[in-house]
Length: 347
Image 1 (cartoon, one colour):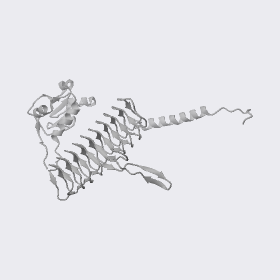
Image 2 (cartoon, rainbow, N blue to C red):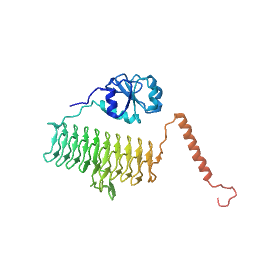
Image 3 (cartoon, rainbow, N blue to C red):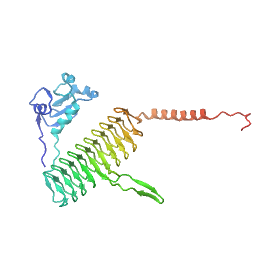
Image 4 (cartoon, rainbow, N blue to C red):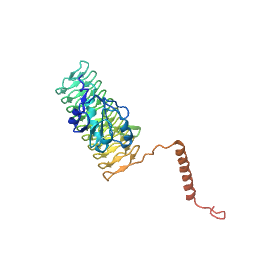
């Protein structure tokens, strides 16, 4: 299993990623680290101003900084307009995680009527069904299940124990992390005279190019038609996408986001952790939904920020607020109660 080069000079990194180097170009680095903990062999970055006080004490081999922070950097500096984006790219040069070599492991089960592209790696315990199509350079990790008829594009990676049910189609360069399930039945049930009856889920799931699906996330198949994620949609771990949802390109969702069925989400939206949306609503492009916020109606105005979460507070402060809320409720109840009179003959 080949791995990436472990060491790079700062001159090489600056040239490769289009950064301005201030310092010693021959200095070699082999890993990444934080401002506080990085040593001379590591690259770090400063993007959040809240960490600026750590810049003067860093022992890193190089810091990726904005131009206005470079004069205060005591070590080698790599200057970038967006230090966090530059760090994301530089960090990829130090990714030493093993990449499976092309070939079909003897312990994998691959149906003879499937179509396997050049350079595909299929690892031990993987199962590839009849008439499945796997594109060039794709990796099917250990324990993955690719159901009959599934289509996977070029250069995708199913890391491990991923399940792609029938009717799933992945674009190119799609990354799916361990435990994710794509194409399971959506939650479709109808009340019958003797209990619940299942609504058949007859659609599929379509993921565009460059999507990423986090560990243990689930994307349900459509009931009628397909569930669709456009290109470059990024899902964190434990995200649930209900049946027949449509998620626009470049939208990202943090962990434990839940989207109910038949919701349409625009492009370039952001959903923070434990947020969600009711079913059958539409959300415009560029909308941000803050943590623990549930969207219950259409959002028509693009680029807006929505919040409904309750931030943490010191326990005693929260208890005092709760008492005040209870008192407010009692006060309102008293105000609404009609006045009575002892001499009222209607009593």
